[in-house]
Amino acid sequence: MKTKFRSQEMWDMVENGFEDANSGDPDQRLRKNRKKDAKALFLIQTALDEDILSRISAVNTSHEVWEILKREYMGYQKVVNIKL
Image (cartoon, one colour):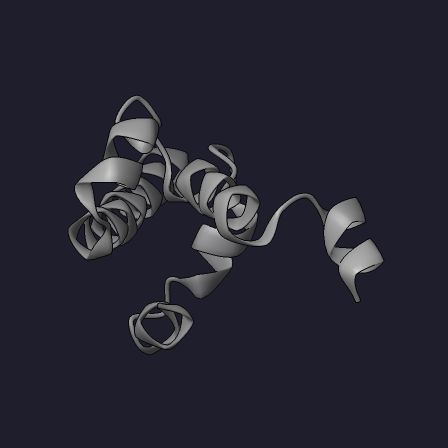
């Protein structure tokens, strides 16, 4: 998944989210960010099984979905560190 997002220049948005206010034309920047986020969200949703898809159906951004997936498949960071 990471490779797909990196190839589409969306990985930073998925991993870190995006802010609504940036320099330049805020409306155009926001529209562009929302479009990229919707595309990333679509890519994630098409790759998931129906069991997990039902858990993320109410989430609105790719970053929020990514955080849910990390918890589902990797666990919380503290648990990951303990496992290591």
